[in-house]
Length: 128
Image 1: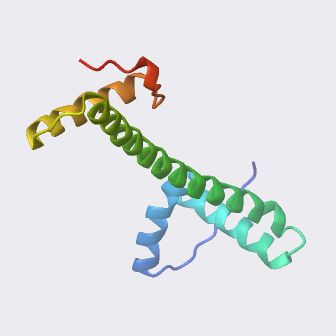
Image 2: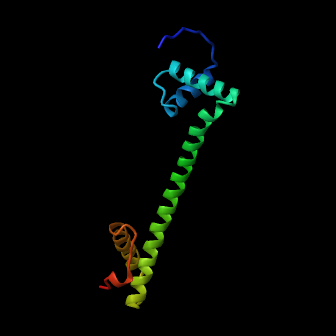
Image 3: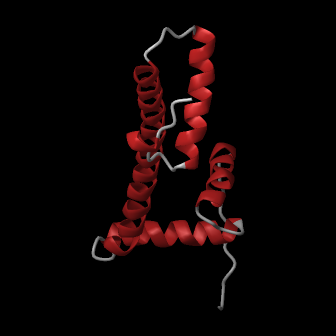
């Protein structure tokens, strides 16, 4: 690739932001980042080409949001499975349970849920 050298001035605060953003943009140098940013901005200004630049950005943003929601839902489902498993054990044993035993039971059920990928079947529950 044939490149020309250009000199430009930049405010120190903008330079700090650029160095942080370089990692997000997967740029290996400041020159690479500036070229990428200029290409993006030109595409944005020309609007006909902006879809080429905005589509990947939107797609990446949506994937990040969905990934975060998926993790939150998975965490909540795990906790729900643990509590459901505890309730099943308590009802199955039908005896009074102390706070200490409840905490032990939570640990035991958490381990069971983790081993079974969150799938619990009442008929497979052991009531020791």
